[in-house]
Image (cartoon, rainbow, N blue to C red; front, side, top):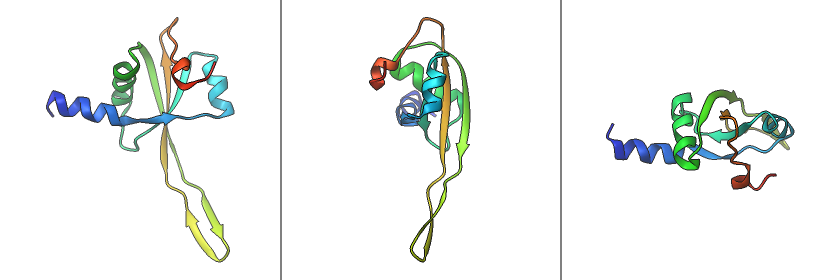
Length: 102
């Protein structure tokens, strides 16, 4: 894969922040929780965070979140599966101001 195509893919890996009570607790330990592409790897997530936010990443953990089964009247449906990444930032580094959390 050429460098330009790789850079383009890294720009699409992160879909946005994931805000939850657990994410706020993780933020106290210098972690950021992000919603990422389902085909993204740990290495790609780390490279994308370093590229987009210009910070140093120590570790990445990913979780595949299964979509819930829901009903609307007599019709059964299912929400989409998605992937969540817990990114541990280096000490003294923060990107919370980019997401609007303090």
